[in-house]
Length: 115
Image 1 (tube, rainbow, N blue to C red):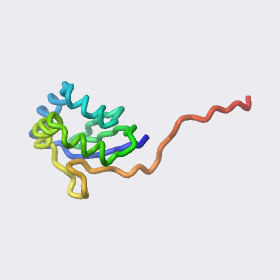
Image 2 (image 1 turned 180 degrees about the horizontal axis):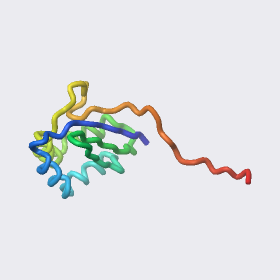
Image 3 (image 1 turned 60 degrees about the vertical axis):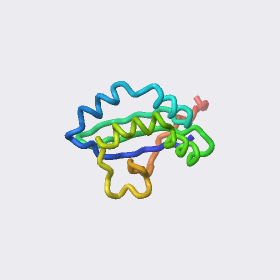
Image 4 (image 1 turned 90 degrees about the vertical axis):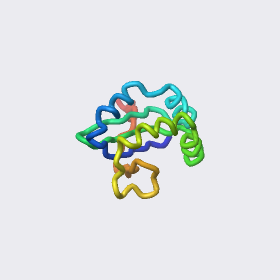
């Protein structure tokens, strides 16, 4: 499993539109995410900064992301959401969101049977 964290700015003038869209994400978009092996996808908001986290459970991340990007319903969704977002200038090669580097992770506790 691969954990992915991303960030982008929310354009203040599109805040309500973006929040409204995400209050009822299209079922076809959610289905495309599932087909691309994405699980536990969340988006958080702090001020005008958006933070996303998801877990990838597939075997070929690049191919699954290309499949997601080619999905017609997802493309229509992005036509609505992209104008609400302002990419960070240092996003690199990413389409829209900047990927964050994981620097620490607390995993599952280890069972201690030494009682």
